[in-house]
Each structure stands twice: as C-alpha cells, then as structure tokens.
Image 1 (spheres, rainbow, N blue to C red):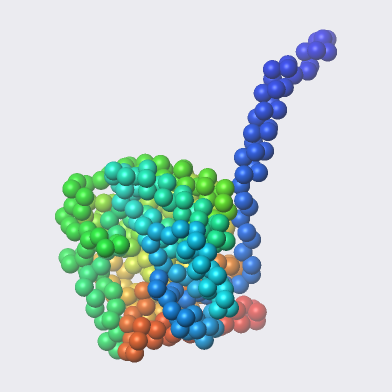
Image 2 (cartoon, helix red, strand yellow):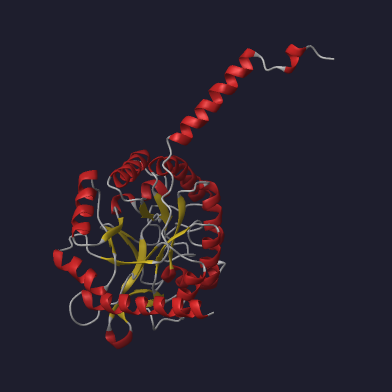
Length: 364
C-alpha cells in the first residue's frame, strides 16, 4: 500500500492548480454574457448617417421599432448621443455602423497599418458596448463592393448592377480597379492567415464587452476580383471554417440574402439551407432582406418581390427557425419621389410577409 502522503497532491501542484483555477475564473468574470434575444424578428429601417427628426418620424410611421445607422469613426459620446436621440423618438438602435473599420484592406490583405486598424476596431467594440449597443455588422472584403454603372429594374427604378466586364470595387471613397487592385495576386492561404490574425484578436474583446459581431457575405461572392480571391465569406463552406476558427460565442452571421442569391450554386448551399444551418448553430443574428434578377455572372438588384427568388420562402424559413435578430431592407431601388419611397415599399412588403409567415405557422 502506498503511503498516505503519496495520494495527496504536492504543495507545488496544489498551488499550480489553485492559480490556474483562479486565472480561469478571472477570465470568465471578465466576459460579459451575451444578452438573450427576445422573441420575434426586429424589423429595422436603415436611416442616413445624417438622419433628421423627420427620418425618425418616418420610421415610426412605418411601424418599425428599430433603426440601423451607418457612419464613420465615432467616439463613445457620439454613439451615446445617437442612442439618446433615437430613444427619445420612441425607437431603438439596432446597430451603429463604422465604415472606417469595415472592409479594411489593411486587415484583409495584411497591408501597412494592419495592427492600428485592429486596435481601432477593438476600441469601436468597446465604445459600442459602453453606449449600450451590443450588435455590429462586420465585412471582410479586401477591395470593396463591386458594381457596374447603375441600371434599371421594374418600372425604370434605378438600381445597382454587376457586369464582370465593367465592374469596379468601391468602399468609403476608395475605388479598386482590375486587373490587379493591389499590384499582385493574393492566394487563398494568405487571406485565411490574415482573417485568423484579425479574428483571434478581436473576438476576445467582443466577449469581454458582450457585443455580437455578425459577418456579412462578400458582395459579390465566389469570384476572384482584381487579384483578390474571396474564399472566406464567399461560400457556405468558407463561413463554416471561419466560424470554427473564431471559436467564439460572439462571432456569427449577418446573412445578406441578396449576396447569397448573387452567388447562386457557387455558394455551396442555397439560401433556405443557409438560414436553417446558421440558425441551428445559434449564429444567425442579422438578415439583409433583398433580391436580385439572377445569379452571377450578371445581376441587377430588384425590388424584394420581383427578383429571381421567391422571398416568401425566405421569410417562412426565418419564422420556422424562430429568428430573433435584426432584419433590414437593403440596397433598395430608387423609385419616383424622394429617397424614402422605395424604403416605404420594401418595409411594407417585408412586414406583410412576416405577418403571413407567422399566421401560416400558427395554423400549421
């Protein structure tokens, strides 16, 4: 029989175990738990960065409870003032954008200034949380959103288009052109390494402050554009690998239906399948509810009810999976009248689809 002392941990091991347990407890205590999402889809109106009191009144008249606000770099004080102003109008802030830390070539392509941009993004997360805003959308495109000159959709409404032979990339005032937007071709391996470097630094901050990061698909997805492949957020398989790398409860998906429909079969899973799978994983936090004329290589953005996909099916799927996140109209074609006309049409149609899907679900 072994001496009794051999069955006891040594003092050194005991101290090491105690220190490790205390450290783990400290890390856990430093994390802010994710706020549970209340039942129901949060239909939200996108308003301009320089919105007026009339824009807030417009949102109230549409019957939405939330607004989404774009913007550039902002301080905590700026975000807090937006929140105060929106709530004074009887609405809530769904999210506050910051184009300065969205589609960052420095991060996606490992260009000079990468670490400074990552620190800027971390501070953005902290500022949002301090202001009481706990969701943000992030996009990881290295050379912007690619578009051709605008074309028209139903009734001559002006709309974004994409043709490979005339498209250029645009973001925050920058223009990216073929054949090589950044002087050389990048490999998929480089893109994955750069994403990993970024997400491993920002996810812990998101966990610390309790902010959800919903990652937007590449627009357009699938294609290599001007020497930059889009292997990460341009396919379903890329998304799954990216979420696994992040390995964080705070990193999820902003599913843009339009981008997914642009990609078509190249996405590796259809839109309904993507909705169901991301929801099953508990990662579906925001939806951009829009439609396009056809999958790549050429498309025009359309009204929600006259693209190639039946968006009734998308809404039914969202209700089926009990989606509780933010849903916005996006890239709305310009109708006659002022800029609000198309948004009124889209939000009204979306609200009707939501009522339809819920009614069907109750009767099922």
